[in-house]
Amino acid sequence: MHKFFALATLVALLSACSGTEKALKGNEWMFKSITRLDSYNPVIEPDRKSDFFCPLRRKEVDWEGKAVFNPAAVVKDGRVWLLYRAQDEYGTSRIGLANSRKGLEFKKNALPVLRPDNDANKDLEWEGGCEDPRVVQREDGMYIMTYTAYDKRVARMCIASSLDLQSWGKHGPVLRERKYRDLWSKGGAIVCERNGSKIVAKKIKGKYWMYWGDTDLFMASSDDLISWEPLEDKKGNLRRVMMPRPGMFDSRMVTPGPFALVQKEGILLLYNAANSASSGDKTMGADVYSVGQALFSAKKPWEMRARSNRYLLTPEQNFEKTGETPNVCFLQGMAWEDGRWLMYYGAADTKIGVAEGKK
Image 1 (cartoon, one colour):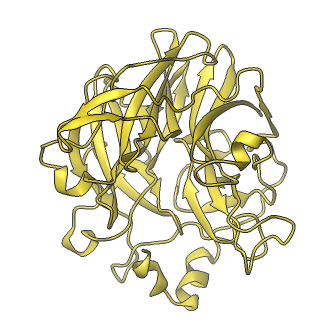
Image 2 (cartoon, helix red, strand yellow; image 1 turned 60 degrees about the vertical axis):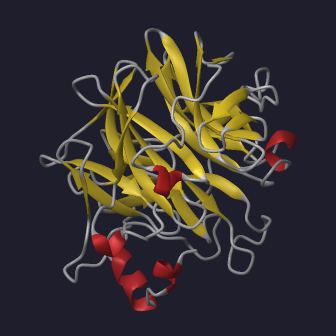
C-alpha cells in the first residue's frame, strides 16, 4: 500500500530531519490537557435507517449504517458544523453534515453532502468513496475541503469547495503531476489563523501551505487553495518534514489532524499517530492511535521546532477501544466555540467523540 515510502533509505530519512527538530524553551505552544465531554459522548453514532439512493449501485443503501468517524469542524452562523465520514455496509464512504448550537448535541442532515457519483471523479472515488474531510475558509468566505478519494486501490488527496457547506464542487487531486498519479496521499491540513470563531487560511511568503501524508509528513503550497505544488528537495523528491520516532507513541506512522494553527510561537500541528508493535512504546499496545503535537516555524513552515514526547489523547473509553478498528482516537476537527477549543475525533473508526482542549 505504501510502496513509495518503502523505497526511501535510512540516510534520506535521517537527513530530512537534520537540523529541523530543535529544543524550544517552555511548552507555551502546546495544548496542556484535553478533557472528554463524556456527558455528550459519543456525539454522533451510526444510523442504520439512513436511506440514500446510490446512483452508482442503483439502489437504496444505509449510507451511515456501518460507521461515522473522522470529522471536520466549522463554526458558521453561530453554530458548529461537522462534516464527517460515514460508511455503508459495503464499506463505501460519503461525507455527511451535522450542526449544533453549542457543539455538543448534533442534528444530522438526512443525505450526504459529498459522495461518489457519475462525475469526472468517479474513477478516483468508486467504490471506496470520499473519506476524512478537513475544512477551512479562504479570505473571501469560500470553504475549502481536503478529502481522500479512494478507489479501493490507491488513496488520493483531493480538493472541493463550497459557499454554504451544503453544495460542494470537486476540483480533483492535489497531486496532479504524472509521477505522483498513483502515490498514496492523504490528510491535508492547511495552515490557518483564527479570526474570531472563523478559521481562515493564511499565506506565508505569498503562498498557502498544507501538511499531508499518512506515514511520513510532507508539504504542498498553493496560490489559491485549489491548485497545489508538492514541496520537493533539490533532487526532485518529496521533502519529508516529520517522521515516526522509534520507541514512542508515534513510532509506526504520523498523519495530520485538523488545520495547522498559526500562533505566536509558530505553527501548531496536532497530528494522529500509530504505535509500532516491534519498535514502539512498549507500554502501549500495537497499532494504538493517539494524538500528538508538533511546532513548526511560522516563517519556514517546513522546519520543525519542537515536538511533544507524550500524546495529548489516547484511547481510554470503551467506545474508543471497541469498534471497526479497535483502539483509535483520530482527531480531525477543531472549533473555537464560546471561548474554548472543542475537539472532535473518530473513535475506533465507528463513532465520533468530543473533548475540550486547554492551552
